[in-house]
Structures are given as structure tokens and as C-alpha cells.
Image (cartoon, rainbow, N blue to C red; front, side, top):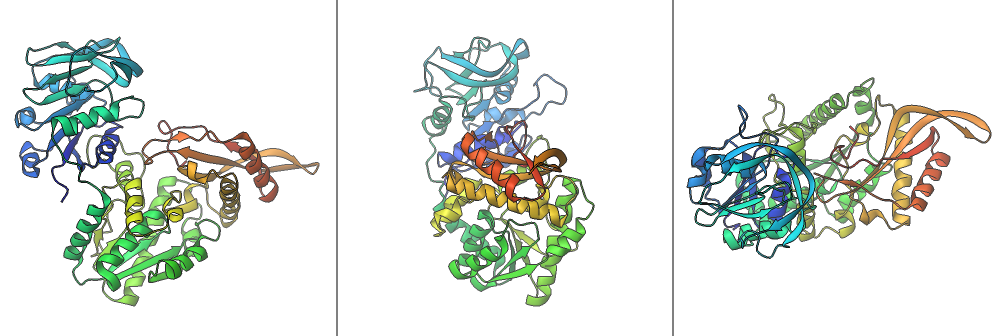
Length: 512
């Protein structure tokens, strides 16, 4: 049982998924739905609360995303965040106009009235603002509970209607008491219970998988990463020998990855895994390709072709399982709201129509740390659980431009050095993701009094919680010096190393 849940209506904010994360961190289940989801559908789902996300639009613009007007009248507690506040204002007869002074970044929130939503919040704390509109007319059935220097109305509420709104983003880490505000809404206002945890998720997933799969066969595409490995353990527990795990050596894996993981799968995790060496095939398909999107699509199609040949050997398969995560879905296609597509993922978007397999994706609505918690519940060791994420297309998207076997080998060696030194400096656990990028750029160097003209490598280390946002990691200079010296001296074909200082946003974690 997960009890009453929270529905988040997505109006296109880059932070919508962070709202979901904060709610789940407080052990309450939530799901994100499109902003125009019908009120009747919402009522049938019987949520305990509704959150209206932020968004890039202005409510007074033609075609601005709006929910059904009666959303505020169904008696379910509502919290509007930024654009969500302005929706509340618009639907409640208030006036919203463009502000003379926009407010972006940190601001000081001053609590001016007693408030259920802001109970226990610092009376003068930091909040994260991102808006260019303001409320200019205000009705009697709401009260203003907080302001900032540039916003006379930074928080409102109507305890009688159980409707609350904030102009700032409580879901981002920059807001000092953001988690407290969301907690107040969930527990003090909406009276929800803390009953969302991964142990319950495992039990409900096993029941669901058994009901869906019955006695049919399932193929799982094992990548060697945390997500697909945890999924393999979950499926083994749910359907036993009906599971057929396949691990493909694409020729785009890290150094020694294929042989090391095959031993681990079979000897330590007792998984029945079919290994397929297809490196030459993948490299052949990718020859001459420079577009990152085309690389991803070619790799995705090649995986499907290989899995199809497996079916010929094991008999009819009806289901295909993969460890798709929520951030993959969000970045690949705007299925929830009016958000922009960032990039495609080879494991998102369904299977080709010619295939009759049905997808099994139990983690599709989960974040990385939630999957790691499932791994802990299933007995996976901590060292493996905390492995850094590795993209499904592998090193293909870390070789910028055309891929060749020689470039992959250079990158494998450089990446191996980076991993060794992260361990030597005891930094691996402090970093969310670490890798090297090989650029299609050559620079002049001098080695042994001889002029060189070779490739540039980029070190990328980031800190993150879920991959939706990330900051570059402030690595110690002595560490960077050691890694740079080793790569230049030990990897033939690289004579210059740089360090990526870009956060997400505005960049992405991967380069392609």
C-alpha cells in the first residue's frame, strides 16, 4: 500500500522533476501528469494533494497552459509554485501582470503573517526566484503571508479553501527551508502519510510483474550499470527462469568491462546471462557517423537486432525488460507537459512496430537513488550500487565526432586512468559521475624535444543527486595534475588535457 498520493501538474518548468524528488524524499508517492489532465481523471485517482508546477509562460499570454477552471473547487489541497501560484491567482479572480523588475536568483523571503505553509520557516531566509510577473489585484478570501524586496506577494494562502501558493521555488536546494515548506504542505495541511519506500515498491512490483508476464519469457538487456543489474535481480525474484538476461559487448564499453562483469553476473549474482561479442558490428554501423542523435539511434536499433536473434535461440519471447529511469524519459520526450526535448535515449520511446514484444520497465518513474535503494534491499553490495552512471550508447557519445576503434582505445585508456586515480585519492564516492571525453581537436605539444600534434581529452567530474541538475566537482589540483600527467604520458595520441567547469543547466552532464 502506498496510501494517498500527490499529483503534480506539469506546466513546463525545468524543476518539475525536482518537486517529485522532494515529495518522494519525504516518503510520499507522487506522479507527474500533463497540465491539461482532466479534473475527472484526477478525481478518479483520488490524490491526497495537488501541486501546480512552475513554467516558462505567463498566464495572460494567448495559449498559455492552463488547467480546467474547476481544479480549485474539488476540495483537494493545492500548492502552486511560481507559475502555479499565478494560475491560482488567475482562476481566483486576481490580476497578473508583467513586473517592472524581474526577479531571478536568490532573494530574501520575509514572513509577514502566521502561516500553515510557512510554519517553522526562517522569518528572513533565502529563496530561489525565477519570474517576471506579479499579482496586482488581490481578493479578500486569500491572505499574503510573505514578501521579498521585489515581490510584495511572495506567498499566499486560503486555509478555508485549502489553497496555497508561493512565488519562489521551494523544490530547489538554493531555498533554505524549501523541504520544510513542502513537508508542511504534505503533512500539516494535506494530512498525508509517510508510506512510500522501496521495500513496498519491490513487493508491489513483483506482484505486478507476475500478473503481467504470467508464464511468458522475458529478455532483459543488461548494460552492466546499476539500473539494469538491479532490474535483473528484481526480475529473477519475480519470475525466475523465465528471465533471459543478455549482455552485449558493443566495443564501446570501458576497459575490461565485458569480461569483468560477465564473471560478476555469473559468479557473484548467480544470474543466467548470455554474453554476445558484437564490437565489430557496432563499429561498422557507426563508421563515418558524427551526429550524436544518429549515433544513439543506430546503437538502439543494433541492440534490438541482436535481441531479436536471441529470441530465435530461446523460443518465443513476449516481453522485453530494460532499466529505463525517469530522467531518461524526461530528457528524451516531453510526455508529461510542455517541456522541451533535450536529447533522445536509446532505451526510451518504445520498440519497433514490427516487434510483438511488450515492454517491462518497472523503474520508468523512479530516480537513480531510488533504484540504488532497491539494490540495497535486494542485497547488492554497496560498492556496485554506488557505481557511477554509464550511458547506454557507451563511449560512442564520449568520442566527439566520428568513431574509430583507435579513438575508442585511446578513450578507454584515459578513462581507466581517471578511475584509478579517483580510487587512489579516495574521491570516487564524492563524485556522481566521472569520465573522459575525446575531442576531434588536435593541438601542438612537445614530448621528448619532439613536436606532437595530437588529440585533446576533457576530464568531466560532477556532483549531483539524481542527474537532473549537476555541479562541476572542485577536484583537488594535485589530483588533476596527476591524472593529466598520466594521460599525456601513458595514452599515445593525447597530448593535452582540460577540465570541464560547466554545471547542468546550462550544460548537460554528457557532452553528446
